Amino acid sequence: MFEAKASKANLTDAEWWMLMEKHLIKPITREWLAQESKKRLTFQQLKDAFLLRWTPTETEKNQAVYELSMLKLAPGDDFKTHKEAFEKLMRIFQLGYPHQTRVMPFLGILYPSLSLDLTREPTVYNDYHQLVAQVYFLHSQQKGKAQVAAADANRNPKSKQK
Image 1 (cartoon, helix red, strand yellow):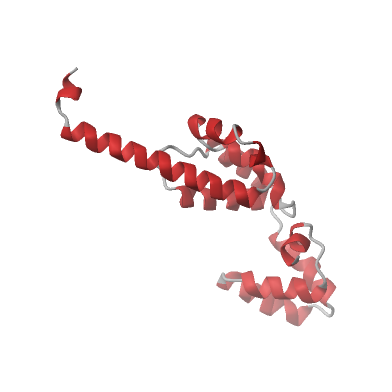
Image 2: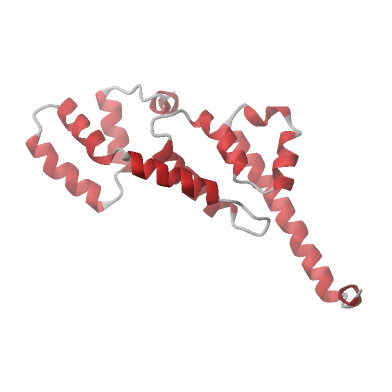
């Protein structure tokens, strides 16, 4: 329930504060919060200042869109790295949007054979987290097949000569 409220930016002050404390990992953000909390009289003023300071600018959003267009997962690539890069860019590009809006852009960063395998399943568009798990599974399978094929090619030098 908390995740659904957070994805729609519908949190109470206490929930928002808990979310900030949980995710403020970077020292620069902690320092900013410590300084600003002394200046602001109300929690709403602090919240507004935080959003003003840390909300991406239009230029940053445009840069994120460009980087998203360049981000492509190849069969031999590390899935986790690509997923993290994708989600980082989506947080900049679609700040405050529900996770469900990430389904179509996520399908766009995949290589064609993987996208084709996924679109054969009608449930792929229903849930972003389910999609990520399915992509991870299929990508692991295809990566394994590629490794087996490479090992076979190394063991059988005659196939290289043809």
